[in-house]
Length: 475
Image (cartoon, rainbow, N blue to C red; front, side, top):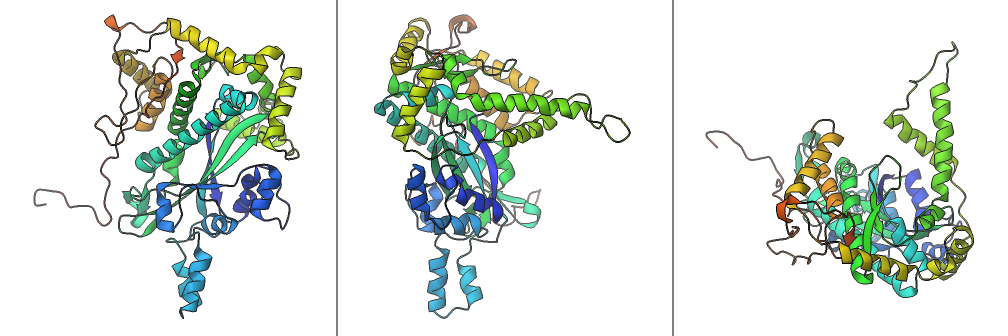
């Protein structure tokens, strides 16, 4: 997946984000102001996002300050301007306790937010790292646009506020959500890795104006669908703007291929995957230790086969054990020059390919457009998606999020360019297809570039605050 999620808790976990994540994963020097630390690390300032900003007196794109971060994510979910609000109430004669409550957004919570990490496909951030300035700006704009659209989808389709006894009532946050976005340029290995941390607050306003907490389980359950939507959008935007195309690429043997930009050598992807190789080697050692571990009586402690759940935990352990220390921060221009020199020396790819990577990708896209029709059979697409979800979910435990994720993967492969629907129009969120004669599947699973509208339906009715309406013959 290209979208990861972790919870943010008040206390030590929040302090980790304030020390490292908001300054490019580096180590923030003690007593250094946030903006100064970001400038030293060579990363831009964080920016606010989301439709819920207006209710808090913030604006989209406004710079994130340290006090705002501390109040929203470190002080158990308070107003970004809680300090100012509290001071004003004290000046008007309120008691300290009443003034403190005025700056709170509903009840105090331990889990104050979630951290979504968005990163484009490797071939896209390779073009970003090794291309010219115009290519870099285009890819960053596509990356930001895709994040904005995914956040809108979360606001409209995923986020719910639970309230009432045992959370029996659920309502969409009508005013939207609030998030802070922080840009990073490199991985811990020093290789290029364009990615953004989207710190999403769990606080949302209900229809009655009261503040509640977003149900984080729903966010976790829809992470795969969010990742598929992000992949679809960022690839479509990049292909449309730069004249590129995508093709299937096998990343992990035995698993389904993923769509990457055509014309970018696989050796360059391996060049960026040094840390993945280290994790894989460490994971192999940990799995051997796991299946051969014995207790004091000489009996095996675990089953001789590593389960998926155990493998996930071992993979996290391998990632922690092999995680290198952050290198000295450098400006992006210096990083891009160093990446190009390193790729030329160590990737095994010809110099002219690296220096003219965009031209090679455009040539590959032109070859694809010459032989691939931008059409798809709707009936076969529906059967393919339903069958895949049925098999992967142990005999048909269908959920809407599973169908969305698989349908987005399917559409990103054979579908061609489609006009973006007008906001609010009757075809909002729909794809336009041209069925093939005789239900023939497209032979080549490549895709000409073009923008793709997001696959989701308009927001359905949500339950208003208060008890549900009574039902029955006398209702």
